Length: 285
Ligand SMILES: [Zn+2]
Image (tube, rainbow, N blue to C red; front, side, top):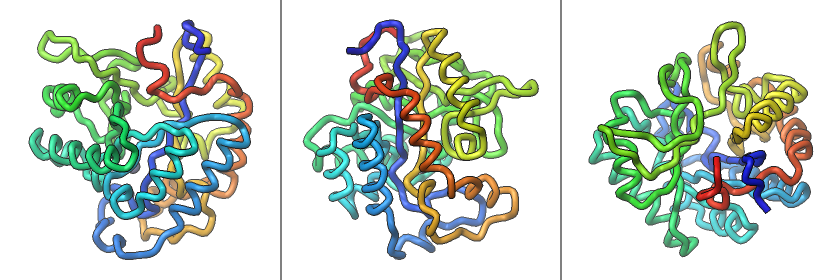
């Protein structure tokens, strides 16, 4: 049973290929014909979750669901929630509202045709919602019948972020109107005067487990949930490598060797405190 005092958390995976990265100079078209180990990596994630008895929320790319529907079926049959990560990892701030609406609808239709269940959540590729997108972004999610979003990094980084954004889970108010789409911004912690992530991606691979666990406990102590976020490629030591500049290469590949081990430790320490996002809706946050 979910505790009303929000001491629960979420495990989220962005289900995409190893080359779905939005770095300058990376053209996704150059890689889209290559074979990949995505299914094998997803199988490993499903096995880890089964072993620890946790259920995740998976934000799946529409293009992945279209080309490899068996991945969606496996995750769904194993009890994981299926949500949308857009169609082909196109950054939200590169689209107009109309283009975003079409991209969202396309991805949701593909997923819903596989699972037979309404998609409730959306995560923007690379947290790519900028301040200027806010007037239309949540309205379009609401029109599409979505109930939650996990799309904003509420601090500044070299790639993304809205520094002035509310850092807590909340219903956005746009033009004075409350939108019925719950936003779950990336959990951030104040370190050396800057707000930084700690619960996923590079931060999870870089930071020690004790620090991540302690920070999650601090959030939960204040009745604030945390979501963990990873990509299947982050547990794959044999993945092909993108040609990236030194700094981007460091961010993208640091700690891959120990990532699965760290994930297991964190999940074990959160045993019984992880739910699918759809199961937490309508509970007190
Ligand atoms: Zn992504």
